[in-house]
Image (cartoon, rainbow, N blue to C red; front, top):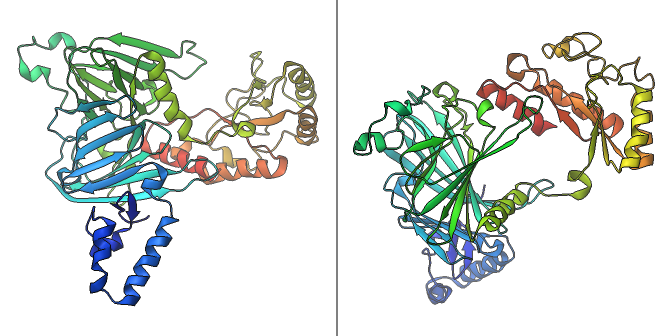
Length: 497
C-alpha cells in the first residue's frame, strides 16, 4: 500500500516528501531552497524526482486524488467528485461531468454514508494506492478513507480508472454496532400527508451507502431490477420509470436519474444480488424524494460485524453522463468494461449445455457427450458444458439416484468422473473437443453445509480437474447463501480457484 501522494505542478510525490515540500508547492519554489541544503542532499532529491518521473502515479494514469485542507477531490478526464472532509466521514460537495460540461452541487449537509447507532466521527485517515494491472483487472487508483464512529471502524475505498466516467465505492466495517435495523418498512397507507415533515424524511432506520441531493425538480428516474433463478424466472429485467416526488423506496440494482433541464444525469449501481437473495434485506435498495437519491442496504446485520476482521458491505458505483438513453447506457457500459479485462479467447463464448432436454443426468455419458460435440461443431458452438451427472457423486437432482449437496466430502471420489458413464475418464471428450475447436466445461456444486466450511476442499477439486484435463470453465450451481459467513467462505473458494 503506497502512502499519500502529493501533487506538485501536476506531478505526484509520496508522503515522505511532506517534510520537505508543502502540498501544492511549485517546483520553482522548491528549487529556490537549494541554498539551504547540502549539495549531496540536493543532488539526491533531484535524482529522486527523476526516478518519480518514471513511476506510475495518479497524474500519469489520468486519475487524481488529493486532500487539500478540508476538501477531498477524486477524478479523471471524465468525472470529478469533491467532498468536504468532515473528519473522514465525507460529504459530497459537487459532482462534475467534465466531458459534458455539467456540474452538480450537493444540497445535503449530512455525510454520504449513514448507519444507525453511529456517533461523532474520529480518527479520520486518508491515503492513496495504485492497484497494478494483472491478468484479471486493469490498473485502478484507490482512495482509502477510514474513520471511527463510537465502537465501529469504517473504511471506504473509492476506485477509479482512466477509462470510465464512474467512481466505485467499497465499504468495510469492523468493531461493534448496537443495531442495524432489520425490521419491516412502514406501510404506505399509514403514512400521513405531505404537510407532516417527519413522514417525508428518508427512512432513518435504513443504512445509507451513498446519497446525493441535487438541484432541480424536473427529474425522471428509471429503476432497473434484475432477476436470477432461471428455472423459475423467465423475465429477468424489470424497469420502473417514475418522477420522484414524495419519499418512496424501490427494489432495484440500478438507478438512472435524468434531469430534464440539463439533459444530463447520473446512475447509481448497487453491486449486490437481486432483492430475493440479498443478505440482511429490508425490502429496499434506493430511496428517492424530489432530487434526493439514496442507496440503501449494507448486506450486513449487526451480528455480521466482527471486532478484529473487516466485513465488506455492498459496493456502490456512481457514474455521470450527458444526453439521453444511449448516453446513459454507454456510461454504464464503460464502467462494466473496466470491472475485469476482456480476453476474447477466455471470456467470449457460445456455450451448449447437456441439461437442456430436461432428462437431467440420465443420458450423460461418454457416447452422449461425443455425439453432442459433433452437433455442437455444426452449430458453431465454442464451449460444451457437461452438466450434473459426469461425476461419481450424486446430487439431489439426479434422475438415477437421489444424492445430496451436503457432506459431499464423505465421498472422497465425489468429483472424479463416473467410472460407468466415463470408463476412460474425460480424456476422450477433451481430446475430441480440441480437435473440433470446442472447449470442454464442467458443472460443479460446492458442499454447502456449515456455511461452506469445506471451501478449501472444493477449490482443490476444481484445481485438480484443471490440472488433469485443462478444464478452466466451470458452472457453479446449487448455491445457498443465507448469511455473511457463507458469502465469505464461498468468495474464498472462488478466489483460490
